[in-house]
Image (cartoon, helix red, strand yellow):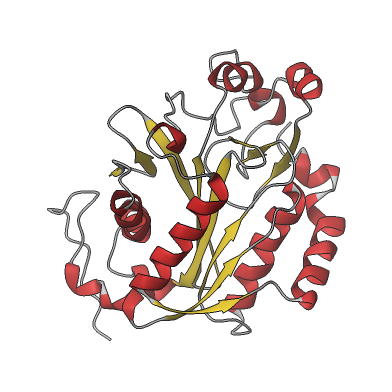
Amino acid sequence: MYIPPWNPTLSETTWDQSLNPRLDELAFDLILESPRKAEMNCALDETLLYRVAEGKRSPLLWMWDWSERAVILGSYQSVRGEVDAETASAEGFTFARRISGGGAMVVEPLRSITYSMIVPERVVEGLSFRQSFAFLDMWVIRALQALGIPATYRPINDIVSPVAKIGGAAQCRRRRTVLHHVTMAYALDTDLMWKLLRLEQPKFTDRAVASAVKKVSPLSDFTHLPQPTLRVRLAAAFAGMYRTRPSAVTAAELDEARRRIADKFATADWRYRVE
């Protein structure tokens, strides 16, 4: 297959439209997951990435959900630099660290929408790294707009309304496979978020990636659909755009994720890899 070279005259949100069939040609597993704890969700994300990379699963879209309040840190973020431990303890928040980079996200049951798209890396060949974010977010922008939510894309990795940021994306690439995941705020206690995250407070280390200070406008500002209904509508929109088959996390994948929690995600070495 001929891969066109990166064209520097294109913007960060523009790509050769002839690349669109690369997604059309895939057959996706579509997983609408029940709520799970933060570490399990992060471990499943890694598990499913390697399942696709190893050919044990088709490319997939899986929609996570959360059974607890948590701050999810990027792979290279400082715990002390991002999370106010006193506020987190008082408000019942835990924290977990995901495998992708990027900034911290606050998640709560029924107040967040999170999904991952896992595809072969050839899908984004010919695009810059920045363009790949726009390309893989294309479907959700279309879906949100079809539901009357005025969502657009803002480089490098934000989904925004005319008011402020709705959500953001992060990526991880392993074995020529792309994990692209997005968290959007469905509802948000802005005052709590500012207390919980150390967005404008002094940082403890220069080695960490800091979260960007951005105003957030949750989806509930633009829709009356309950969060569970909106998740289902978004999954249905994806199924309407691409070839999909309903699927679910298997018992073997859950067992593998539990091993990853024990060996990695619950360990101090991973949780505090950047203190």
